[in-house]
Image 1 (cartoon, rainbow, N blue to C red):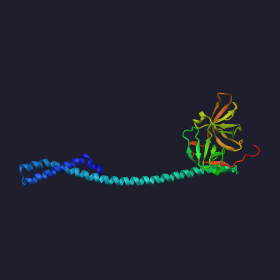
Image 2: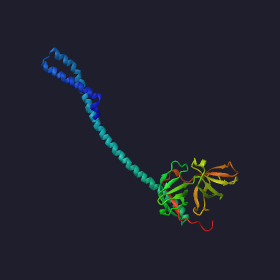
Image 3: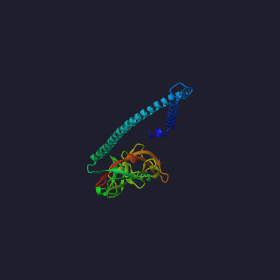
Image 4: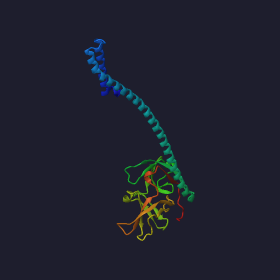
Length: 282
């Protein structure tokens, strides 16, 4: 309402009221009779009375609307508050659903490997300048996490602990060129290794490389860890083959592998701790 007193409409009303007061003084000075002067004044101020009445009605409507808008804004605030509460509940539900899926898949993996020990961690930071989706998690050496431990989402390999600090750790993902792990195709049993590749990483893929040119690996083949490393068990799924290509620099072939989970959208993960390789390879 404060702006109303500064508006052109209010200034017009003030001018009309001043004219009305002037007319009243003129009428008072000339008596109540129908003189020529009073007729002229009446003729002049009759439209002014009509306009003043209309403007007055307009002011009342503005005041009513202002009151109505206040109530409307209060309703909006209440609805927004309720919406915020519902969104918080939805976020909690989605987090719970994500955790349930995480543990469900991990449980399936643990049933086949009862000695596996997991620690759950939250993703607490990402390096936006890193093209290989490196991220920071909320657990470190104080939680028995160590360099080289496998990082999983359910039954899928996400990467490894690149550097463990007391209360947090840095994860190097499977699409990072610094990452490398022995792997095999679960159908053909062809053995090689998976590593990151700068070009394939642009599409979120990693590379199953150094394959024979006569490889039987095809689109849709599932690639899993081979368990040769002392810190990486056998059978953790890395991803699915999306393309087969020949290397430019040699006669070998490689497969572009899409990781089993969307690394960029992870908000939690599992660290496989205390794993000890069997004395004899399978």
